[in-house]
Length: 396
Image (cartoon, rainbow, N blue to C red; front, side, top):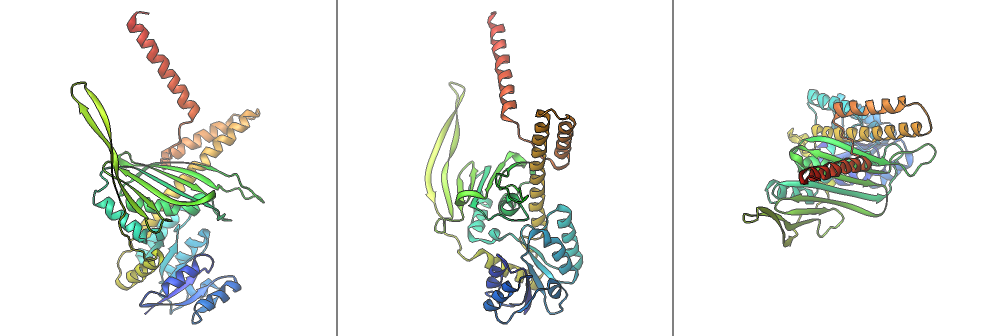
């Protein structure tokens, strides 16, 4: 019997315990949380559990085999490190850590101690995403052209992180799981329209990731939407697919739509033909994703098998998050420097901001988007040059 402890009984902790109770071969024996009212609620869910306000008590216990960490992001690294150092297997809520360096340290420590390190990228374990992975791997979509994701909601505002770190881990984990392609460039922009008592985190963010072979992935993240959307669109050369998490009856839809290029040899012209075919809605497993994840964690402890969402999967997500965060900050620093210049302040801040941005592009491959004004000026120059060439050829 595998004994499991849970640290954190806020929003996610109760869901973890509820699903762990469904898994044969394990039992939840203890839960830790600083709030006594939450511990009283935990007793109602499972009267046999030990409850405590001390996480250290679970970490240092000799009767607990694995620990689930469902606490704020800023605490993940220290708690996971302490658990693994004490010989515990760890399932940590997304994202794994706040920095790439911390993620790598946890991976190294877990390997050194011979313990399972698994990240709770829950959506990976849903029947719809597993079906989507099968469709892509079969080649049914053809060559992948693009990946477009929208994750919107009204809230929930987090005190310690912005919308990027709250919502993007879901989408970044799906991207890295579904498409086996290396990210090349990352650019991001964020907005902070809601502020209070010094809190001014981004509540809206747009992230673009360029993958190898030219595939573009775009993510729209928003805490200020009147509607809730969880939708991903993947376009291929043969077919296209939509994954809508909130449409329980039709979560995966495959569209036999696309374009075909026909060569007209007589006119030496390429003709675009649009193809519209059938809509296919495959059946997907409706087992709760978190239950499947919990079963997988226990299975990996029992067999020593590597988790699907292991430490390296968590690392790839943190790399994207950290790079996107830096892109947002660099864009903001340039904007602030230009505001200083507008009001007659020194140009040193602008030069410094641009220099930091160039360094960021070299170090982290952050790609700053071209401003529309710059693009228009380039376009106007190109038009003028083409006009001049036509006049020269005509002798005008």
